[in-house]
Image (tube, rainbow, N blue to C red; front, top):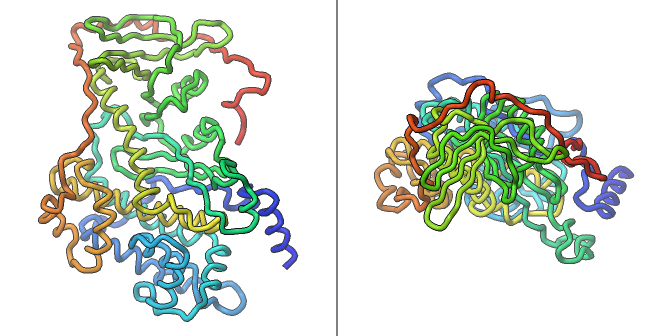
Length: 471
């Protein structure tokens, strides 16, 4: 009892600070999970969705219980209720209670519990049940999506991964101590999501929650990359631009494509191509001895209409990565923006259920599990309909799939037959990024002795380097 009072006092005095040490961040499994039996890949997706959402809890029901009276509402039962409520678009803790108390969850019977009992369990239960479900689902999806992986995207790279972040929307003032926090205060923000999204498979590789919504994500991104294979191509925007960050990516064996920050000065080492407004050169970033990058990079710029495009990459060979591919690959960075939109808008993460960290974490994990499944459904439907994944509306899929799972024996077959008439399969509004095509015979290859790093220097700050700080 005393411990509970202390924890409540900590929450009151310091909202959203990490007193939950074991749940400081949400780390997702990568797709390097052991392969399942190949038969899983041939099973209809609708049946598999129901299997994972309804039979995983049953398979774990025999797990040994802690000492004491068994709980009427198990962690599996609770996690399944949250998942099904999100899948059906229900957007509050109250709906979770109604599902458990009056309708039952899947094959599990209704339990005559009060709404407060369910709220208390949501707050007390950790995310271990969701993590276990996610592990099973990720293992199955890694096997199932392997035939649909788009290997035409940067075939030289081990994987193509987009890196980005998104701030969680502010919580409602449901508890008294939050009513005292003024509007605009960052304490109303439960945190910031930082994610790695696999562009080829359209799956989340990892998603972390930083409880400081104003955190410098370049520091955290450095730790996130440790699980990625060497040779992975990273796509990220100007929020991650810094000389030390770009140098370290090259030293660690990762490829990257990003934009050039305005007014960034550079030293040309070798001109690969320049004509008709197209510029392609190997350069060193920074010209001052006190603040300059050490690794050679490739700077590409061109103009389309009134718009000037400038990109940086450490893929130095134009034969490996032509200008047109640089532009189109960077355009695929938008995939992670759409993935965040799926979480926040279509799966309701913008409506945070609670001001309590434990409940927020459970909601994020549940949304993420469903997002993985919906992205996988989108990829498989696109492949079987012979269209690009972006031509399958994720918003409409999120809206109609729960109904199809309830009323249709073969949702995939139904969508293949009626998807175009429903306008769920339709021409994408996204346009491929255009860029000039440069004939390779017109490219001037650099002599090997030029492809060497130089000593790097970072500008010194009185507060110290934010990049090298430890999270």
